[in-house]
Amino acid sequence: MNSRRDYAKLAADGGSGGTGPWVAPRGQAASEDRPLPNGAAVLPTSIAGMTLEQLRDDYHDRLFNQYLPFWEKGGYDRELGGFMCELNDDGSVAGDEKCILFQGRGIWIYSFLYNHFGNDRSWLDVARKSKDFMIDHMYAGRGKWRERVRRDGSETGVLGTNVYGGLYAAAGLIEYYKATQEKKCLELAKESIWAAVRAYDDPAYTGALIPGDDYVEVPRGARSQGHSMMIVWPGTQLLQVDNDPRAAELVAKHVDLIVNKFWNPEYGIVNEYLLHDYRRVPGAETYMYSGHSLETLWMVADEALRIKERKLFDTAFGRFHRLLEMCWDYVFEGWASDDFLVFADGKHPGGPKYDVKTMWAHCEILLACMMCLEYTGATWAKEWYERTRAYALRTMPVAGHGVWRQAVDRLGKDLQRAGTSAKRKCNFHPPRYMMRNILSLERMIEHRGALTGFPG
Image 1 (cartoon, rainbow, N blue to C red):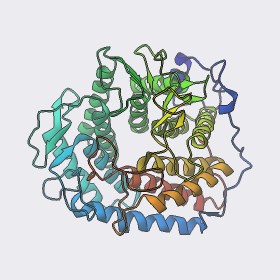
Image 2 (cartoon, rainbow, N blue to C red):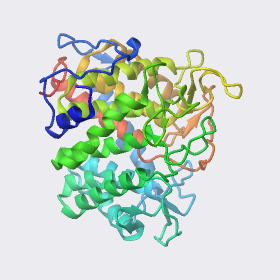
Image 3 (cartoon, rainbow, N blue to C red):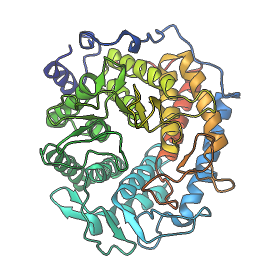
């Protein structure tokens, strides 16, 4: 079942649950297909030197007593609603901007808190007020969103140059809909997804290139793995609440593209960019943007859970394991999350770019390894979880304030990323991974050492 048509039918039907194996394309590198444990595997009784209960409680403390209190010092605008983008290390506001990325992400976080952590009305109030601000001041009509506004909502006149903002807005609205059943939020989310798809499918689209990326010359109309990722993630969530065949076909298409087009079996890497017709970009066949590659693979695995397709789940985590090992810094620890070249090109060395280790990529590793461990009991997932957690907690937190810094250099020192304000703090990746870890740990504790059963 390696054709797009068959895979789209599987997703539209909600998954086969075993009517036939998912088959990788002919010629695929053998190194990617690492077998995962079968149903006989059991969960460990401890992770990172703690019992499962202790680790869950540790994350509960970090999330509810450290990270969220930091963010609520100034990151959430209590007066007007919405989320500020630039904060000082003590949580005070350092800039006037509210960008669409932060609004969609923040609405998702607080809606998810409400949906999964006790239906606390205070979480929903934050999401509601922020949702109202985002729609009232940033919606530009026909599924399009303004890139940024001032704190009071006054316009800067800027529409997004890429579709990420609108897709994060859609994700936030979908999670908010799960909490409230407000139909207009679901409809606006769907409108935003389809507007993003139309923009991305335009051969004149210029938003695929990652800002600051000088490794690759990307032509107009190029395709990006990051875009497929940001169609699959909210798409999977949409299909959990709305059985829309058109949306199912869209998600299936982009999972297929991730698995069979962006993946480059010749080198066992993921190409971040392809031409508009999804052929390889000449000269960019050996380039990978590592962070997106790991993040995308756990989202493919999440979709595999929804459609009950175990072979797809195993393929995603087999590749994840390979890339995790390829880009780890075995000298100074930490994961090289930006650019990877198979060969040196005269301007850049071959291999990982070790001098940038981002906060968000380490969060994705922790989310994904816990997810894999819960369903498979894979020893490698536990080992890499512990290694990544130790590194992240040693280098990423801003001392005394609960929030994590954007990135560190190879030696673990604070690093300001090119094109990103030093004041920008993240309201999304750390709380998302901690919430997902807590929920996984609670299921693991409940199951008393047994794996969480794969759906189907």
